[in-house]
Length: 187
Image (tube, rainbow, N blue to C red; front, side, top):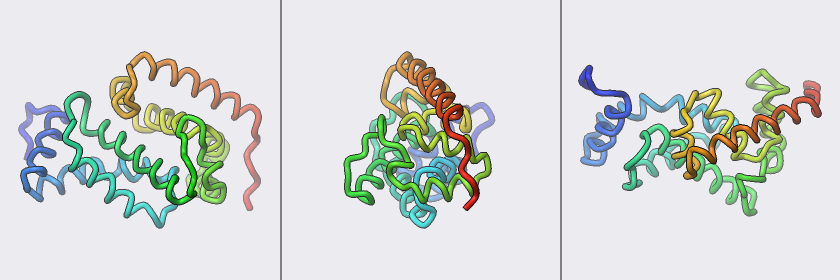
């Protein structure tokens, strides 16, 4: 059990260090703490049948990544998840995936439609999935995961100011897409 005076970030770093030292219970606790975050991240970015393999890759990436110095385990976990998803789509679609310009609809239109229908908010979800993957990810992490500008800067490996301008531009693009594209009828 973590000490009451330890912050969540400190607890996460402690768990990660104990996991790296071979303490399996620390791994279990860290996975328990962030499992929903990883699952939610993948929900709109990969086929459901591939989620378990992708989760495994993400957790292995966190274990192997020795450069965690600044930010939170949560932010690094999502940075790894972003890279895993890009590699997944590059392999699956046998093409270069530029997360700054490639959207989920470009990569897998049927998956985009399945996800939108399954999750409700069809118009918003379809608009998000028409956006470049990085814009979609940025907005989802900011508004659904309530990540701070600093955490987002770690995930995207850019300065805080860049995140602010990307958020502004992504919100504008989302507004335009919502205005231009009515929801698709249920098929």
